[in-house]
Length: 382
Image 1 (cartoon, one colour):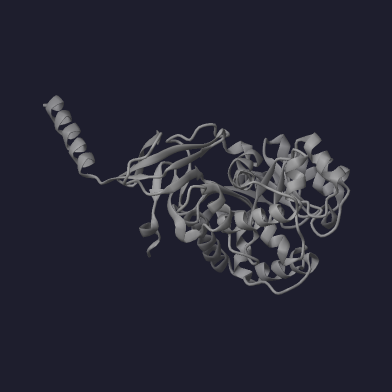
Image 2: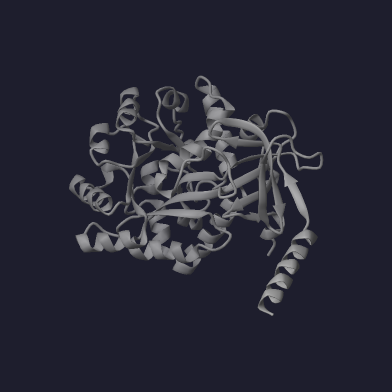
């Protein structure tokens, strides 16, 4: 009887699968080796197959890329949107910059809702992994952790002590709930404090990252002496500073739209030409929406203006570059597979990478794959 029941169960499952609508999405797949012909087969809300070669005639015309990586965010800052005009120091420098005053005056519930909406927007626009610099100590990290839900990308949370008056035990407790520590500029903190944070993070196999040379050039030897896993911004960095990052294999995360708010521009072509590993982030939620397609456009525009960048260069920063920066999150893709997070973006012409960095928008995101599950437009209806 048990065998018969098992046969019936298998037959029932096969019948359900046969009744599910299959849909083919894609014409190109972006792998680490480059662009190849291919598509995904979606069935019952999941990816059933990932196929290389010419797609069927009825396939949705789209490019399949690794899920976008937003390598630097402050999603809690979304409660302060829109930010007023002001300098970096006036808006974001701790402890009393504009954003810090707003965060202190805002309830945990309001911050949580703002973060939930920001994360949902990220997934909806193709981002499947993000790294957040989360202030306000353990409590701040816990608010973000509790805000993560099914419609959120995967998160790498880099916490920050609420005060400098913390013991090593306090730091270790923070590192138990976060994947590392993310700090503002070396100008904002005593060097011995930063050294202690870096040492505690690395002793536990966690990340340590820091902003560097955003509004003013900072001594690169001091910054790199902290052994950061990556630095953020480098808009005021010299060629020597970039070379030092390359030599020490320290990746750089750039945030073009956030930088533009302050009249700053990262020299992306120079960074890439010198061999730096570069990734993109959207930075403060009070300045711009965490939409990586918009960040791609801004990065590509800067690249063209400052001496040339290919569409592939820009897309790589938002996909493979971000994965390299956050290397604790797993393998670097070589070939797309069913295990990968993916984004499918509708395109019209025959140069899909160019469309991604010039005209594609959130309305063109056909599907987002996270953990094999396919998220479509209907998933966002409330």
